[in-house]
Length: 188
Image (cartoon, rainbow, N blue to C red):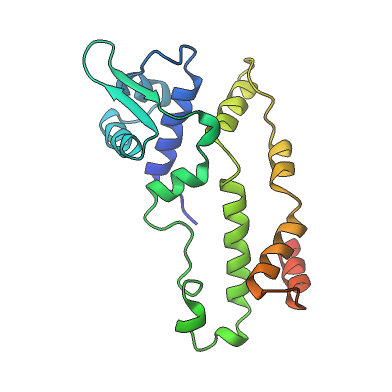
């Protein structure tokens, strides 16, 4: 899985807006680009996409710039990845595998990819821009929220349960393959 520069820059732009100590004061793309070390021209294109998706409010002229339109607690990394990426963790043999792959009934790899896809979605859909902001403030010795990676992982849930539930959901019920996939995932 490769995360595009566009997604990373979108995350950094929203982080910069979430860090703004005057949340009703707009930031220009020039300010954000300078603070984040990003090309202003490239950032403008990303800002337009974020604006169309409803994440940003903008105005032009003196005092113009960008504001977050929605609270940073409601924007997940998964939301951004689905918006910015052309394909979000898609393995060709998972999509429509039951109808397009002649080996589907005996294939174990498709089960691994499906479990991995669920696990990745569980992570990116549970980390918000607010979590990033709080972690940034913590790492840089400034006050902020109490976000820690351990807390986030606790919120996501125990990996054994997540993997088992994913397998149960995939197979419609508990099966013998779930423990094997879980054991496989533990060794990786």
